[in-house]
Image 1 (spheres, rainbow, N blue to C red):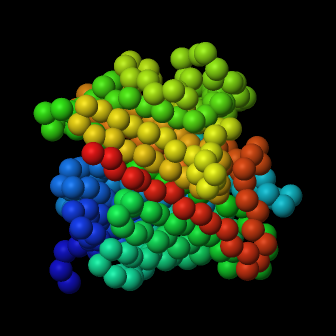
Image 2: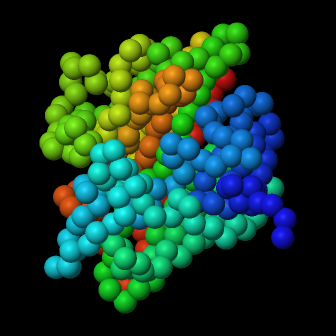
Length: 309
């Protein structure tokens, strides 16, 4: 038996001058380039994903407090994989082998069945469709309850974005101008579990108008998003050398921005994660935004990235 890349089989999508690489492990987005310029702070083919880079977060995004929750009158304990904070983090499908299917040169579909297990005794199928076109990259994720009982489901994604400066070299997060169309942000405790919310108006987290990030530290979930006539909410990132519009449809009522200030010096603030979420952290306990799927029921939606030169 030969060797395998840590992230498994790779599928490259190509459309014009844009390309993306989807991985078998976690159905993650490992690389994305537009007009020959890196859009994603990804990872090499001979490495595994770190810090959630490009991964899908299923069947919950962010954290579950202590990994414990009650559903249908029964208590459950998930594996605690964020040991320092004592939480269950970012779901159960990130390290599963997904089935990859190429649809055409610019599109691929990934499928996986998350079978019932200790802590999550529900069987849910997930499908992720990745497509490149003239408008950029679109990702459509769908969850279907394949079991015989209702199942709690949340979804998210964890891409980190980079931008070039005027000289073409990638800039730090400090030099990126950010717009987030959010009226509210969630407040969290020292274990990053939500404790409440506040309006952002006139405060340091009011990013409704374009603002250079500077030294603002973000590991922040924004809600109450303003949307266009098509129902899309759009976060914009711009620099002297380019820009990105990261949009999400109404399936995703929250967006988390993270500047990586807890990373090692070489990685710290070199990119910005913009994470579309169907529910915030700890939704398995709070119920905020949580979808409960009946047997056979599905839900899903799309988010995407539109590079701007």
